[in-house]
Length: 358
Image (cartoon, rainbow, N blue to C red; front, side, top):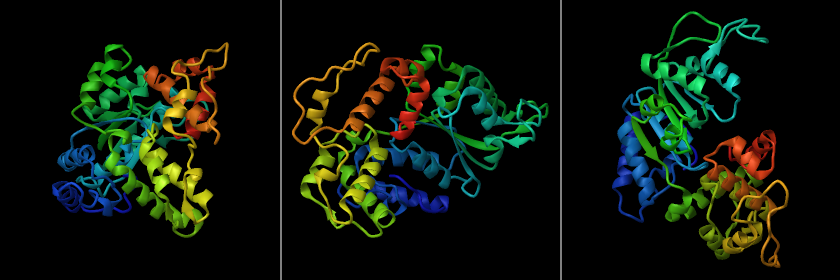
């Protein structure tokens, strides 16, 4: 499900998806030859929706947990659209502070702010004739939301510091791992912008709900990453390691699976991938016993219950799980999550980048 390797004609791509969807359960993974791996019923439903909306100009809202492949699906929609010859431009709204996000999205004129020594086109202009993909759209500030609403309503915008109105010749695909409807009722997300984005919604299921897709994805990443990581394909993977891949909960979804395969390839040095090469070295249930259900307080370290397993624990995996729980509990509010974890906002961002959670 991870990568689309080359541009294809929209009709060809859609035909391939539709042909795959019509296959009976157990056939080759849908769209595998396009790098879109998955034969589970829930993933086939995603591809069916993708096939329907791709050739339209409709705004699309993709939802799902971090790492489920929202940008990959956005690329798939773009490649099946009438704009496939145009650019696909992505912008992560959570990765930038408000002022920088605004200038990146809309661009700016010379002298618009300190340091603006020359004019610069924003992502809206860069995506002209193509698709603009806005990841983590729920992290937009109210001010940026208001400006972007005009883009969707009037198809026009101004650069920062500019007076000239520019046309927004883009198709918008937005993505979020938050429940925007809840954010809307809480006043954190504009109702009018929500309904402008929520024209055609596609929810991407987490990997734990796509058990049938784990091994095909595993084999795909082994084949894809082997030559780049170790210069040759891995010898294979043991039955025990396969069982670990199937038993694990994958809180980081497909992105975490890919990272786990890459790490295992480095450690196995071209040999057989075994359980000791995996990022987690204990069963999920034992991990859960060592990770508190409640968030840690500022005054004390989180409680640890039970004995350490003989094979040890993976502190990085535990830290990642705690961060994910804090983000989920706070609706991915970075400031609140940082407070729960006893971290500064900057340190939380650093850890999120390290674990691929941004």
